[in-house]
Structures are given as C-alpha cells and as structure tokens.
Image 1 (cartoon, helix red, strand yellow):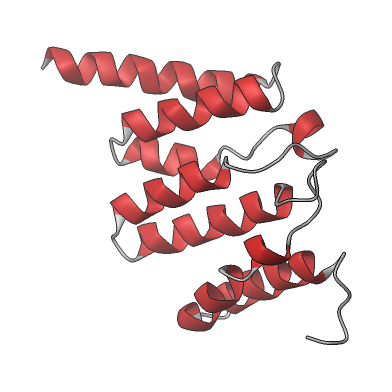
Image 2: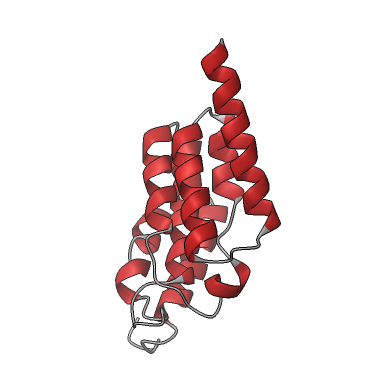
Length: 145
C-alpha cells in the first residue's frame, strides 16, 4: 500500500474491500475493510469520517449475510461513531444497513443509530426520519403482541 498516500488510503481500502466482497472473497474483504478506520483522517478534527461509516456498513452487511445480527448491530452503531466531515454533515449517514436490521427486528439499535444520525449529521434527512419512525412504530407494535 506504499503507493497510496495518507489522504486516499482509506478510500482505496474501502473500495478494494467492497470489490473483494463482490468477488466473494469475504475473509479478505473483512480484513481490508477493518483497516479503514485507522487510515481515515477526513473528519473535521482529523479523525475517521464518512469512509469509515461506509466500510463499517459493509462489514455489517457481511455480518448479516453470515447470520450474525448482533455483530451487524455493533457495526451499525460503530459506523455512527465518526467525526463530521463535508460529506456526512451535508448528506447524512447511509440507511441501508439500518433498514436491513429493521427487517431482522433490531429496533433498538436502529432507533439509536437514526437518532445519532439525525442529531449529529444531517438534521433534515427524510430517509433517516422515515426509518426512525418505522422502527419506533414496529417496536411499539411488537411490544403490544
């Protein structure tokens, strides 16, 4: 990786790990994607930001594919533990993994993720508000059963 400078290494690793996942090389993909956070310095304070969020969302999807819902929830919440940057402060955080976990009945982690995303990142993101409302509604309906 010495040919990749520090400002693009995290993006390179995220893209490479994503490609390895698509190629079905899951152990390699996981190993590569887990290297993103330490290399991501795009946050406003020089720490991990949107590239880390993307990588950890992919890791969460891999965990779901492997049947590990708890690990997927951990990745979802970890992916929100990043600094603001120009991307996530204007576009917010991705909702795909949260939607997948909602289908698995993981209301609490989805609610927590959505609330963090809406309070810390893009306040007006309609998709995230919709996922949050769906999670709250489904949790209430489940509790009434």
